[in-house]
Image (cartoon, rainbow, N blue to C red; front, side, top):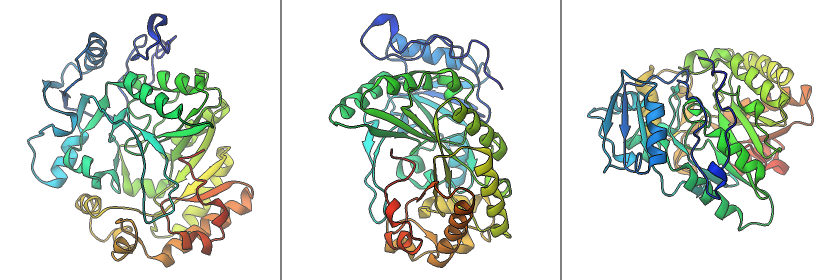
Length: 395
């Protein structure tokens, strides 16, 4: 569904000239594609102020046939879906939309056992409506116990947290949106980007980097971003998406969105992860890289293999047969060697990365390249040691 003509029109960063942040109000919410819900839950804090109540009511009005349950004493991560079984819970959560509040919404990542540079990230949303079978979020503790799609209604307080943290630094600092959610999948409902992008555009220190598979960008090209927002798109060849991604915008639609956002002056990056060695992957990925670099003016490309917790792997294998291109190529001992996640064998990772790097260097020699969540010695083997820490989540 395309946004209406009034979608995100003339939204102010502050309401009535006040000095506090506010929820979006002057816009028409639109039902997003790929969001199929059958239950809405109003959790603790969701309608605790008139502003929040108006916001929630306007979104809920788009779903007159959906059951709405008030559980105003229950935190967003304690909603009982009355479903048993990991896969059933996961599938029910994807069709459940929760409004709530998140107190500690701005955090610093603390990855260990890999070369992640660690970074500030923030969460106006939780989880994601898309159906990627390899979803790493399915294995994280918060999502495993409460796999609902969440909108955190305390956006003004989240922006205030970002501001307080950013003002402690003396140089531009990235705040990443996309670690625990898709950054744009729910944007037609919330118009949050209409607050986020102007906030970062005006801020002397804070910058926003974000990751998405969404094509909800019609409004973004009209917002003054001041070069302070950087977009990354998660992409993979169509042949891979056909097998491992459901209920997700097509690869070609994502590439078109990337091109349009770049044409509007945003910096655009690509995230090619997880690489998946399906039959004929060498030709498939070589051809796709050529198409990607021709279609989109990327400033950086970060690549990575599967990087999955055991709980997420179990859910993935419930969704598809055990003999799939991910499961047959992971090496269980990689979980003990590093950060607790399972990966492909080292030989396969190096082989796949080498092909991608060779193809990129042939077409765009100066393109920034990085590896995601990888061991340092893998970077060294590939001659990328000077790029450690220069990946998509940071400036």
